[in-house]
Image (cartoon, rainbow, N blue to C red; front, side, top):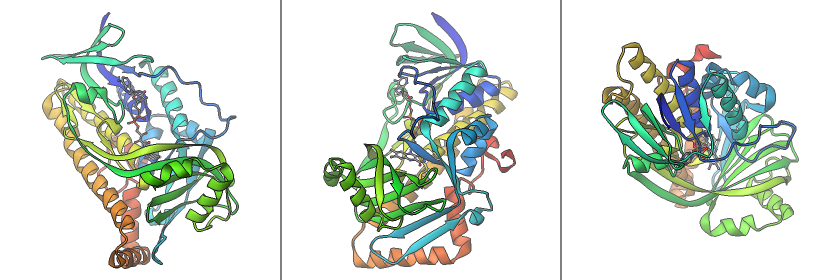
Length: 405
Ligand SMILES: Cc1cc2nc3c(=O)[nH]c(=O)nc-3n(C[C@H](O)[C@H](O)[C@H](O)COP(=O)(O)OP(=O)(O)OC[C@H]3O[C@@H](n4cnc5c(N)ncnc54)[C@H](O)[C@@H]3O)c2cc1C
């Protein structure tokens, strides 16, 4: 088989599916390949799934433009109106409010599986071709097209190949794109908990010397936990029984939400910084974690990936309208330049926060306490931080602009 299509996307995670849906709605033909077998349909009658994301307002607008946001809200999404960040080693505390960004919510906590499920349905309903159990084995860019070899032996041809295949991207390797990376010597423990006190529609984050612990609000007294722990502590904490883990979480959160009870399985994810040296190659673009992985402390990783997908939509649509080859280097550079600069700024910001809060020097401890209090008390500075976290600070791709919701 040697089928020709406009765009092949490798990777059916949230980011690849959002790019596929945006591009198919814009009139491109899209084939999306994913290595995994088809997942079961999302069932809101079941317990919460473990992986959730804090979805920024700009991403919500993008998902609205893709016609999946109303169904996500109807199914299971929790709006949060406030965010409280505080430091275990100083008196500093920072409080954000939805009014800082003039929005109904600072963001929504949504299960990754629900977002992917809705996007998958929308992509297929709009005529996208989704192939599961399909791995890319090779790619050959030519003057007018790129040929993709699948591990089953078949070939596909397209104008453009999009690598959305996550941190270990095969597309990135096939395109011979190197990465800069470093570990944080931390892993992220993820679990669901029940809190004794109400979460007050607030995302809570406490910075501990070993790394931050976040409580992301869900329905009732449920919260999703992301606890960044040093490598030398993670095995001990993971091995605790539920009661002992609940005690450790209560202590780590300074009992701010009362006693914590563990309500699900747990999992630990390696945390790393990784940014590709280039986001584009000959007839090829990288988006999402394939291009950049950042520390989850600011809840920005998937939001950055959605912004990649939204901008890719814009540059490809405008190339098509001008009758140009969508994979021309000038077109791809219009995607790469702004995305590289936003990723560089965001990853630097996240890295500096992580380092600053792990530093034990008394001077730095005092400085960060002062910094948190100052930011909290100066409303323009607070609003600037909140707007950045909400994805409102920079120029937005068309599908993320405010008139969308
Ligand atoms: C603990 C933790 C908490 C986080 N919290 C947040 C948050 O609150 N907010 C936020 O914005 N971000 C958050 N993130 C980051 C976010 O989860 C990721 O940035 C996001 O899931 C990346 O999505 P993706 O679609 O790019 O990649 P992935 O989700 O990794 O998807 C990649 C897809 O590619 C497929 N694939 C892989 N290899 C191949 C191949 N060779 N051929 C075909 N298919 C292939 C896989 O099957 C998969 O479906 C968090 C991350 C962690 C670790």
